[in-house]
Image (cartoon, rainbow, N blue to C red):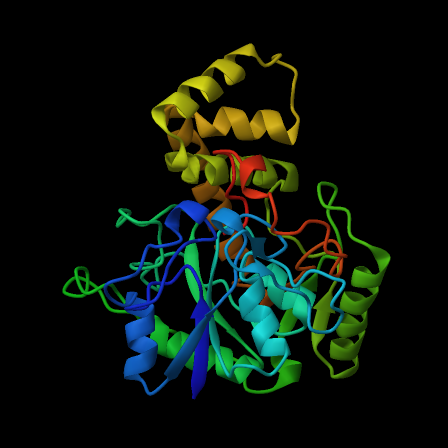
Length: 343
């Protein structure tokens, strides 16, 4: 199968830049582990696909490679940060893709371009070789995973990419369970069209509701009120805190000191996204542990929910693909150490 991979994956002899002009001449010495697994399974890798600067946008442009457009409408963005991946699949240029996702960077481009994407459970696919130069440790929340033109292709790619890093393989093995149900009517599906923290355009809600109605006609048990025992506002707050803590390592010492000073000067009542992000970028470890504790409590609530329901349907994003708003020229200077929401 001919495949391409996201530019942020190392491929021996090819540049890995993450869209950063300072890394324009950085050439990888060896393949990322996931790339080796795909090639070892018979994939024919013939290229890499475009990303935004720092993998941090729902558009895909940078000063090195320029702008990637949505193949369905060239005036619109393909999403990001795996926007080149999704666009190449939607245009029929490639058979399979490998992307990465910390804040919707697989899911958003798949949604914008009308292809399939999967953000796997953290840790089941080694991220080694899909990182900024010099980084070898796993990053919290951040995962790598496949994009494809069908669910079957996603499952195939996941079966190849997943499994422990060789350094951990002596201690554990991965066994992905098949679906318990054999017929569509055997599934129990919960549906949520929007949340108080996440406004969703009516056109997106209508499409999702149409899917729920179709499933109902197929005798699937559909419930539009079932929810896990979590508070959605708390979930969003914990996510932002952990997300911005996870991307904080990009700061230089001077940038960290500057952001710490900004965080101290913020009014106590400032609850804006900017304020949450700045505070999280300089988060004390004790506070990170508290956020992680809250996360794990929510994980347990989700696990309990999925003993009763097989699927939770909700929008991938609040909007469909929007018009491209910025171009590559001159953009890099406007990004700061806070970049990194999509990845």
